[in-house]
Image (cartoon, rainbow, N blue to C red):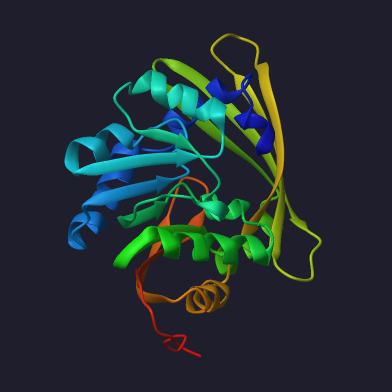
Length: 256
C-alpha cells in the first residue's frame, strides 16, 4: 500500500485505522511480551503514525520508533511531540548502539517481498540487538490467508472513529510467483458520513505472506533462536507472532 504513505494520504491511513485496530489491546499484547523478557531499550520498527509510541515511552526506559515513511513520522511527531522518532529502512539499520528488544509491528514484514529483503532485515536486526537480545515480529500466515482469499476475493472493512464512519473496499488476488506467497491488494477508501459515499483515496500494493518454515529457515540463517510462536487473529488477517533470541551459534530448525 505504498501510495497511502505519501504526504497527501497519510492522514487517511492514520484516521481510518483507528477504527480497524484496537491499539490499546495491541499495546497490551506487546507490553506483556516485552515485560516477560525484561525489555529495557526498545526499537519499534514500522511505528507508523506512533499509535503505540507514547505507551512504550511511558512504560520502558528507552524507546525509539522507526519508520520508512516520512509522512507517517510527521503525524507521529505531531501526536506525540516528546517521542523519539527516526526515519530508516529495516533492511539497513545503522545504529551506533544496541537495543535489548526490537519489534516489527503491524504485519510490516509483509513488505519484505524478496528473499534478500527478509535476509537483510533479520541480519540488520541481529547486529542492532544486544547479546541475547529479543526480537519480536508478526507475519501474515500463508497457510490460512492464501486459501481464504480464494473464497473471499472482495471484502469490505468498516471504521467508526471519533463519530466518523469510513469504508475500505478491497480486492485480494493471488499474485503470480513461483518463489513465494504474494498477494495483490487494491483498495478504495470512502468517507460515509453523509448520504453519499465519498471516495477519499485509492491504494494498491503487492504484499507477502509467509509459511512457518520460511520464517524458521531465515531465523536460522540469521542466528536467531525461536523461543515460541503465537497464533493471533487481527482485524483482517490470521497472523503468527514470533518471539526470538539473538544467538551466536547455529541451532537446528524446529520440526526440520
